[in-house]
Structures are given as C-alpha cells and as structure tokens.
Length: 258
Image (cartoon, rainbow, N blue to C red; front, top):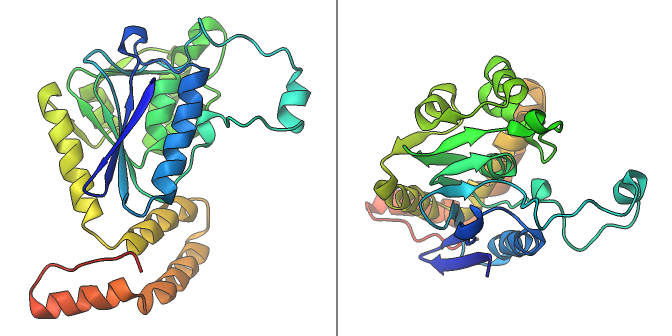
C-alpha cells in the first residue's frame, strides 16, 4: 500500500510508502491519505498523528507527475461542479494534532503536506523547497498561503519566487521546523513529542489546536472571546476535574476524552 497507518499507545503513524518514487503522491496515495486523516479523526484510541516517509531519501516530493494526468474537465467543472470522492490533499483536516517527521526531501506538494501539520521536525539531511515557479506553475496545494503564515513574508517570498531549496538548518532558522536532529534520531523524537501530547487531556488539546488555528484569522478581541467560550465548555468536563484531582493527589491523571 502506498500509505500505511500504524496505531499504538494513542499514536497513529502515517507512512508514505513509495520510496522508489521518493514518496510522491499518486491518485491512490491521495485517496489513502484522505482515509488516514479520517481514521485519525474518528478513532477514540488515537490522540495524535505522525506523518513521515519510508526510506531515507524523501519525506515526499509532491505529486507523481507520471501518474497524475491533466484533467479532461474544464476548470469551471472542477471548481463548481460535483466533487469527487477524493478531496485534494491541501484540504485534509483533523481536530487532532499532527506531527510531520521530515526525513528527507520535502518538495512542492510534499512541503505543502508537511505544512498541513501542526508541528514539523526534521532530520539534518532534510531539504525543503517550493520549486513550482521554475516549471511555470505555483504551489497551489495551499503552499502560497501556508508558507507566509509559517515563516513570514520575506522568507516566504524568497522560497516562493526563487524556487530554491533550503536545508534543515535554514528551515529551523526561519521557523519552518521546530527541531532538527540526526536522521537516526528523528523517529524517536517524533514519538517522544507525540507521547507527551497523547498524555494530555484530548478535549483540551483539540480545543487548544482549534483556538490557535481559528484565532489567527480573528481580531485579538474576537480571539479572546472565543478562548473564554472554549474555557467555559471545558470547565466541567470529566477530564478537567480528573486533572485537578490528580494534581491534588500527586499522581498522573487518567484522561478519558470526556
């Protein structure tokens, strides 16, 4: 299968499993990524997800151009007509935290996939780029919008307009990734971060993620109001009560997602 999902200890690990094609996304991969995100969103035994690539060379190099033929429909038909069963990768959403463990090349749609995730960490051998302008196109899988939000205007423009690649240390400097480690240490780091998140109260984690994402599009006053509403919703949840009891009793809380 081009995409596999492994679940243990409340963590789902999504592996792009086409190392012979640098983990490029073909139609089957896109459908299975959509299914993986749905599985993560709906399984009670999953609290956090990790996305990574098989092999040592690539996280994902974007769309597999050899297997992705130009559509026969007009743009109007595609944009306003009936939607297909497979949504674009750029629209993948889940209320649960996602970690991109970038183990090699993250180019074009591969970087766009990484930017869908909430936390990005990288191997020191990783390379990043949005090279679409060099072939007469644009990063239309959310790349032009998410890169500015991820790293700021000037660094985003440098990547978008030059199409040049940057290495892991430069990605760390501009804030595209949060950590850089030796390639052999990347899986353990991803698992460690995921385990820490999975140990927290699931409803509170989901609320915090939602507030951070939605709040960025609101005024500060509107964001603060939404924050208070979310706090009120969580105030009497079983997990919040359990958290306070566990603190008082000096033990680890046993969160149930209720």
